[in-house]
Image (cartoon, rainbow, N blue to C red):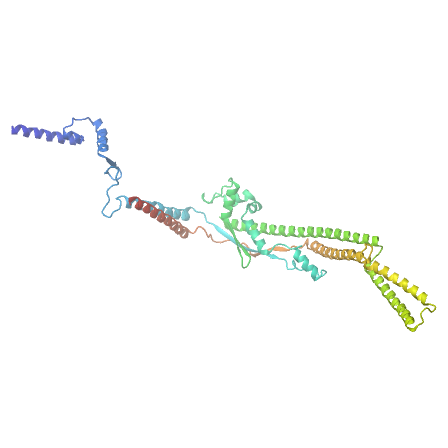
Amino acid sequence: MDTQQEDHRTRLTNTTAERNERGASPASDVGLRPIDKGNKSSLRTFTRRLAGLRFKKSSGEYTLGGMPPRKNESGNDAGGGKLLLRSFLLVVALPPLVALFYYSLVASDVYVAETKLTVRAALDSTAKSSSLSGGASSIIGKLGLGSSGSPTQDSRIILDYLKSRAAIEDVGGRTALARYYEQPSIDWISRLDSKGYAEELTDYWQSKVTASVDNASNILTLRVKGYTPDDAQSLAQKLVSSSEALINDISRRSRGDALRRAEEEVERSMAELADTRLKLLTLQQTTRAIDPVQSAKQIATILSTLTLQKVQLESQLAVSDSTGTKGRPGESYMQSRLDVIDKQIRELEDMLTGDKSSSISMQLKDFEILKLRQEFAEQVYTLARASFEESRRNLDKQQIYLVVVVPPFKPEHALYPRVFVDTLLVFLGCLIVWSICALMVASVRDSTEL
């Protein structure tokens, strides 16, 4: 009996060994019927799902119920260090190597032509002619007739112009840019695509032409990048010429506008003066008095004379009455004369200070207002004429100039690319970005584990 049991165990052990060699399912060890090779994979999957096991190919481990894999003794994921190292190599180490390769072997040499400009006003642009009085010069200066903008403002205008699309058109447009920046010798990354949109050309232009203004000295610094020394110098000279043309056009338009405003002011003041004089003439014809002031003076003189005569007659009559000789011959004549003088005085006083429109006082009020308006119109007309003559003389006289402090010289050495400096900047930038991203990922993982 023991021999039979021992033979049965031997056959079972041999059968189990053979099944293990053929990759049979462990389920056969517990008395399940054998299965063919085609059903082995499905049975294993079913068994793992039934037990809650999941297989992770990257680590070769089973996880229970989708739980994260086992951690090593330090507490970190087993694959975390490898992922961190791979991201560092990909984000931090690789870009600087590519940049080093590009800057040292591929990138074209860039030459920079620099020039310094400033805007100056003419020495006699604010000085007025000696024929003008001090008051006229002051008023004309306050009105701004014949004056241009400040040099600082003109420098800002040039600064904005050099960065604009108008500067591209003035130096030759797409054709000129293609000649300077679309040569086959330029590397394909830095090369211009002249067939692109106008906005793309402007962005490329602004990357090659830079300008800045020193507020203290009002000097504009222009830097032009080119891929040959001749191209950089030629383009800088063209920009200087176009900037000078712009300043001259601004000056010419300013002088033309000043002349036009002065001419309009002359016509307006002349019309106002003529209207005032016409009203004054109408008043003189209505009152039949050339100058009411003179008429008033004459009436006042006559009143003084009549008043003196009246006082003399009244004195004589008073003496006769006091001496008892009243009624003598000639007193009636003196009394009649006194009455006539009184009547004349009353009439002259009414004519001089009456409330009627024909009185000298009313005429004098209207006359003085018109006379004051006439004098003011004459002064304005005089100033307008002086301004017009000054603007006419300055029409062919340039008021502002573009002064080239430092002309654009031909560069002898390429300033770009700066191989080591630019590579270091790329490395630092990538390192900063990688560090920030790594800290964010670590923070998120810590928060999820908690």
